[in-house]
Each structure stands twice: as structure tokens, then as C-alpha cells.
Image (tube, rainbow, N blue to C red):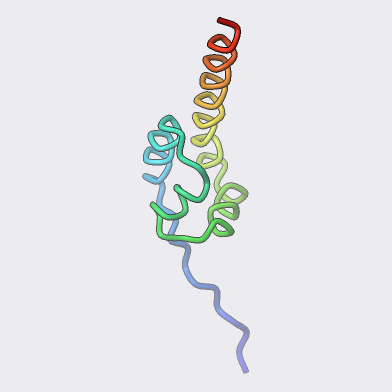
Length: 77
């Protein structure tokens, strides 16, 4: 019996551009996985396999920080 052959990845380089836009809008990993029609586990694998994809998600951290600052300032009055 031959060894199992891995299925080709659904990852495409243009996913980085989409991920940046979605991340800036506050998309979660679950949202991203749904948009790319993959599981969150696959999304996490892509983050490890494709450094440019992980980098594109830094926009999510920036968006989260902006929201946190805004909420903090609003709470302070």
C-alpha cells in the first residue's frame, strides 16, 4: 500500500489581501475560516506555513487596539 498523499492546499496568495481587509473590519478567525471555506484548524496551519498570511492578520491586532483605546477613552468620559 502506498503512503497517503496530502491534499493540495486551498491557500492562495491573494488571501492575504482579503485577510487584511477582513481583519481591519474586526473579523475573527472563525469569520476568516468561513470566508475561505476552510476550518479554523486549516487557518491556523496557514499561519504557520505562510508567514505573509500571518503578517496580513496583524491588521486585526491594530483594529483591536483601536477599539480598546476608544472604549477606554469613552469609559473615562
